[in-house]
Length: 619
Ligand code: ATP
Image (cartoon, rainbow, N blue to C red; front, side, top):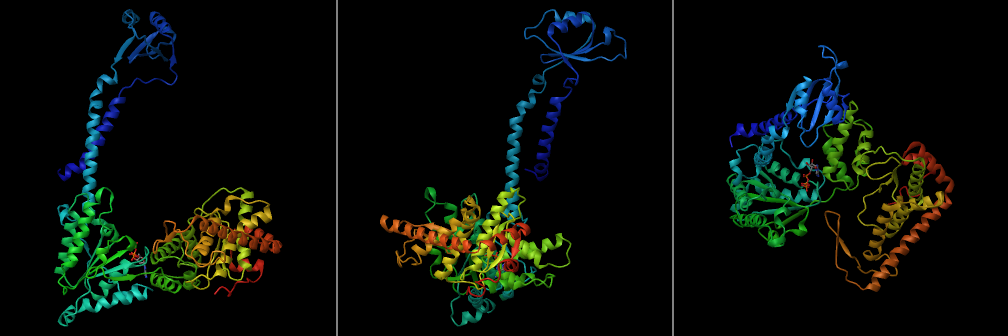
């Protein structure tokens, strides 16, 4: 279809529809606002009395303008009456109209006049859908090939990044020291492959970068290309999967041949799992296109002579689903794992992303790093950007701690919700959060309080945030027991101060039960059960999801596990009850403060409760 026509057809289509619409309503008899509905017999009497000046018949209705006082003098005002004509045609009607001297207009039914439009409508819709699909396909291809001719479709390949793009080096990758070291070994090879070839050293071919989303896998691959100053071909495996079988394989071929021509070079395949899943497991015999693409990648990697300086890096956060053929020697046999950053690495990442930003003197990046456990590099970058946006919105000259703190809360818990909370509910919320806070404050192994709030954010109505003083890699039993107690303390506080409990403890109970079950069934922390692995699910290494496993123990053991879990939870709730009971006055003060201020930080909590028992004891 010619390009001009393609652009104008939708406009034309809309034009035709609008025209049809207008035509449909053209000259529709205007029923005046004050029109009076009269019986047919009365209408006929008015005709006989010659009191009707003008008459329009449309469909089965007659719209008549009356002469004032029955006279026909020009310029006199007339009012409108409407009547419904009988279904059986009245043989006298037209004679009567003629005798009355009224001006008669007969308007045909729209049905007769505009039937052509109704007939055309399905065709127009069909044409519209066709054009829409065609345009989408076009823009898809153009988008994917960066505006190149869509005829490149079958042979199109990965985006080669121009060297004009700012060179990324290992300095841009903060933390991830082990991964940088492993990948860094390849820099020397890429810089001088000839030296390796002369010594007969075989080049590494495939490196699989594994790790949770946003940990810098793409960044690391780019940094390798930047350090070695070689061409970088970046593609995502999901882009290989097209509607037509064979297209993916052809793109893989093209990408490898281009990369070989420009060697030394790096091919980076993101989301390898999109094509690299175990073959032959798809529904209906598997996905032909995906398998062909995977086979093509494998055969291209086998086709390396051993001296070509092309390194294929691939990233995935699902190494568990990859086809074992991909991991065999000679393919992706080097595995580099990227972890979520620890506190120190988070501080380093924050430093990288804020190095060119105007920070206010009150910004403490190491405190921010401590306050962002579980954040990936991408999350931290996003946090910095959100804070900068907030500063710009408030017309500030620099980014302050408050901008960061506000955005941290937003990223972690969602935006502040303007929720109408009843005063008694708000009081209950304050009691609940104060319960968590006071118990955490008086337990020796609990993490220190960072902030407690009753401002609703995201799905939560309030929250007590605690931060470990040190990053923990193992969790001692005393620490876990204190954590269980803190989790159940919100419910205990409601019971103690309000005399009943509410559904507000839903999330606490879920988390506590999950933790207690892990303590009993996985970590051997129950005396009755002992050190036996009785788990019914496995945690996914990178995605943090639980994957159900078949049960491998008896019904009796399952009962014993359930009882041990329940005992542990009850014991923790009783401990929380005891702490709250012994500090009732302090509890009431804290509730009052929280209701008044809505949000309290660690110092404000200490001002009400005195020094925390756990400060410094958590490590
Ligand atoms: P995905 O699995 O979702 O594709 P990824 O692991 O490839 O994610 P990247 O795309 O490399 O993650 O990271 C996204 C952004 O996060 C990067 O562009 C970078 O700005 C930032 N980032 C991630 N890790 C780091 C790090 N270690 N140092 C500095 N910046 C980082």
